[in-house]
Image 1 (cartoon, rainbow, N blue to C red):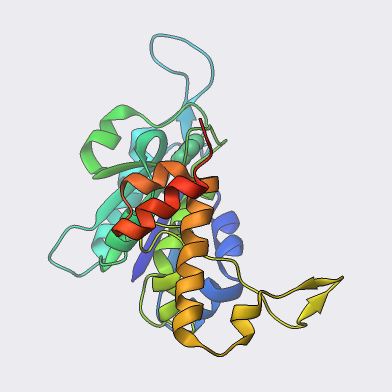
Image 2: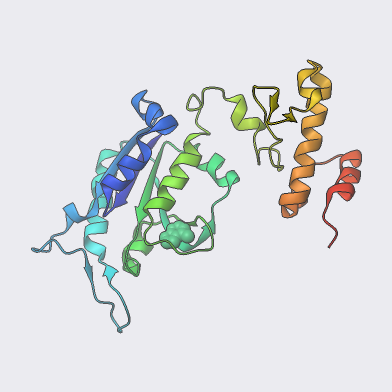
Length: 246
Ligand code: ADE
């Protein structure tokens, strides 16, 4: 996977992604990350990349020219015949979710476009953007944190990025349910014991207990997810027990 991030703050994105699991995946060559400084492409002699909005109103708008030229430079570098998807981070986009992370992970190249101020001149967005994506219903000061969230979440679905690929499959959301609780040593912490079944070594019982815990958690914390979860008859009965009475 090759990521390109078009931004006014390339250092922020570079720094944010070069630690831990994603940093290691970059060092191992499983991913590449190029943070492109939009300001470097302006033809304006003072280095400005924004201007007042036509029609008036508060704030500044990022100009089309540096964004377009930055995009063209990325296109020159990518050899593949297919035009890469360009994701514009905006609260007006489709809300990012696990299914999208899995789908984006299939791409060879992804370009992220981060806006600032009151946004970007609509004309260049019409010309280059293929996907408008939001990371939730709140407003950030720029698209960088949203791009970083997406890159983190997409990358962990790329083979080899996580130490054990199984953990991407058994965790929250992979089957439409939240993950079961986890425990590690010691067996007793401040008089609280690890659930007995986990010490039993009985794999079928452990699997069943975990499945029930997943269902319980989902009922209690995110009942909205149950619509899409695949549950058998017995499990649907369990939900009745755990769902908060509304
Ligand atoms: N830019 C500003 N707010 C955002 C959000 N919620 N998601 C994605 N990009 C944004």
